Amino acid sequence: MQRNKYITDLQNAIRAVHGCESHHVSTSRVVSQFEGETAWDGEVETFDLVGHIKAQRCHAWGYVEDGQLRSTVVLELPPVDSPSSAVDVAIAAKRSI
Image (cartoon, rainbow, N blue to C red; front, top):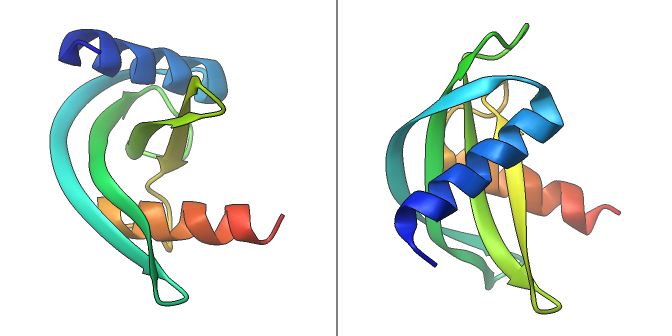
């Protein structure tokens, strides 16, 4: 997938989930362990949010599941304060379902 399309797809997900516009800020490599195994090893995109009522920033990434591209968007609100903590919170939330 082309990088620009990937960023645009994540911005579309942010708009759909949180109802606001965003500007791409950076890309971070994150490796996250859960129960002794690698739960995520990939890039996380950071976006500044425009017009969100609570958050100034969010972290988002895409992954393939069942042959389809899916995305995760996590607002930077406590306890989330970095791309790494966004991944950790998302993994914990998914595991508790």
